[in-house]
Length: 223
Figure: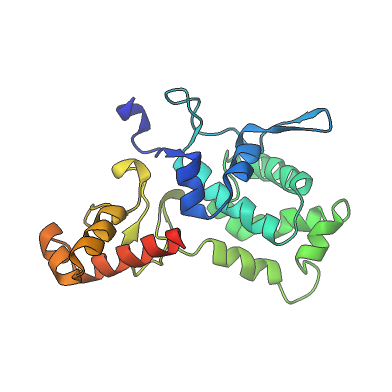
């Protein structure tokens, strides 16, 4: 099982909710579907994992895709429109997880622009027809902290590229760590006990900045 998860990452629904700020009920609906008014609604995309030890779980790409869907929903884009956009982007980019692909960063605007006539919520959410390019600025912000190699998404730097916190599916099964490999929750818990950043940095042989960033990151998740 461990070998099967290397490079994919694994997150329970509560863990994914904690890392993304997306309510668990939304994650369940988006990845495993739901019943509404007697009709079964299919998932927005196929999750990376089947059941793991009897529990539903997410992979790293699921985790990042959830962030994008949540951001679009917060802007007022409906689930039916997002479903259409995902299907269109999957076919156009040949990507199973299209929103977090580099192709979407460059061509995502055109996909939503094509849906304006059939989905008025898109026009309400983004000014796709003016020169203001609100959509472009919004999408650019979603890609902040995402790192790619050869066009493939490989890690997420949730505090920014110049900070120490890393979410990488190839390391610690995708759980958040600092660059040196120590889990952020371990450093934050140590700091809560020791009350000294320099002492914790010495104990775990990490830079002082790593302790500060781990504590900041875990504090934001707990807020």
